[in-house]
Length: 142
Image (cartoon, rainbow, N blue to C red):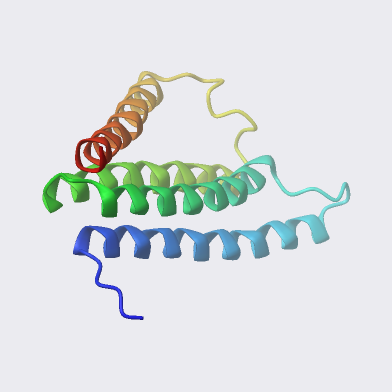
């Protein structure tokens, strides 16, 4: 069976696959830390990065389905999906950074204005991006 997917769906699926591959690599890092730790645990942010990457990879798969079934133009779907994927990867990256630095167990403790702004942008980007795709699905499928 040959399936023809639009470029927006292909890019979103590739993103999901790359995030899943990152999750697998992060699992190796987590295992290494568990094996080397006296208490048998990885740093909290290594654990969070691994789990987040796993969850975000499957979230990106769900996004790809809505991209494919949305009735909006390709550029709208691609923009909505890539905004979400960008925030997924940025979140994982920030967790990885804290895992490498071992500088905190709660990145929100300091609560800088940059972090608060980043969280507002993440919330608007992820919820807004998915809302666009969900509306595109609803408009074309019902």
